[in-house]
Length: 98
Image (cartoon, rainbow, N blue to C red; front, side, top):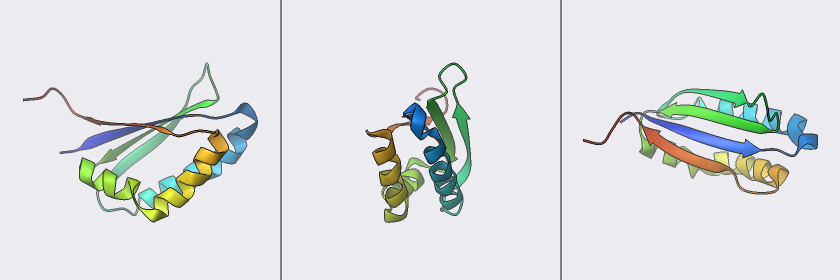
């Protein structure tokens, strides 16, 4: 079942420029993962320190494998250090339950 992963990050205003290359690195690495379909990064207009990443995966299992990987966690650790806290995640599927 295809899922959407929503990732929300609040970045200190003076660190936004430091975040952007890390997000690009994660995106580049994720595109090579089994089950990755697509992704986009959005920046909130009225709160430019807030970023939203929406990625589509073939299944929650594919996302979880990537989320737990050492490759991803190396970059994610740098991001969380930069943010001064943890990144917020949500995994969503389409429509209503049966």
